Length: 360
Image 1 (tube, rainbow, N blue to C red):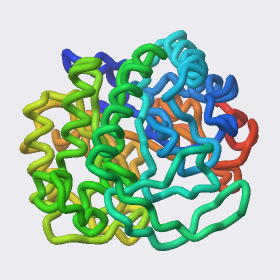
Image 2 (tube, rainbow, N blue to C red):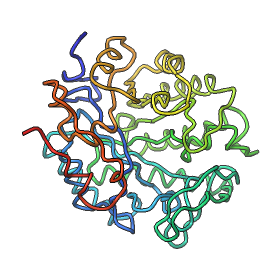
Image 3 (cartoon, rainbow, N blue to C red):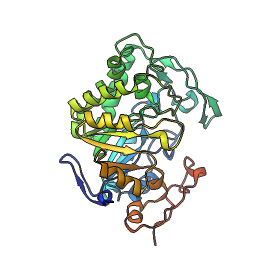
């Protein structure tokens, strides 16, 4: 087995000290008005030995703040909060992208600021419940379907957020097209039954993402834009549909034409009932010529094996980076990993956030 994972990586567009990526993970430590705090700067600073950090999902819009205490990047106070975080990571020699995540129908009015609404491509509620600070567990509500004009306004919100990200010092942005959030809600024909230019055919259902990507490229440059997908993922009540392979073939081809920096593919099959997606990964690799990141159930051995296949260029780790701020060093020497405290993943304060021990 090779030792590619911990070696430097340089694609010409992206220069990293190793091939490990810290995956985006919601941690719910922002303020009640969705401003990043100093504790978050320490959390990301601790993990800056990753080749690349991708932040927790960060909303480009008040309407996208479906969960409590997640950060936004649509006003100046939020930008200033993020500046402290990017400065901390860069001081340690790290690279950091912000993940732009609009929750769409995966939200609740009790979690949203005044004047915001739960929107989606179509008025189809997600099954199940979500936590709200003000009312505890609540059923997912029926969202209001965007008008066509509101779709275009939301695209502009993503573009403005990307500009804000550059102002905040981020090295780039990742558009969250996975895990059942707004972009994937447009892609999936079971959650998008629109009859305008953003619904119906694969081309129309892909239009929302591709217009965001194209306009963000114009705003900040193609070398600062990535996209995350989770093909066949069932998370957040994403129904299965017949055209998955054709959809991601089309998306990979179009994103390749745009020459975005990377596609980040999350494989849910290691953690729930979602099907195995090797064939979709192969499709995306065959159509997309720039950087491919794989995520989902990796340890060092599995990561090295995947890199040896020559399909993925980088490997993202979620929980291992959450619980091991010095994950890179631990993998380098084969040290035991800290185990997760699941009860503190989304709770306030340092516990289960910045207090996981380093190697002595």
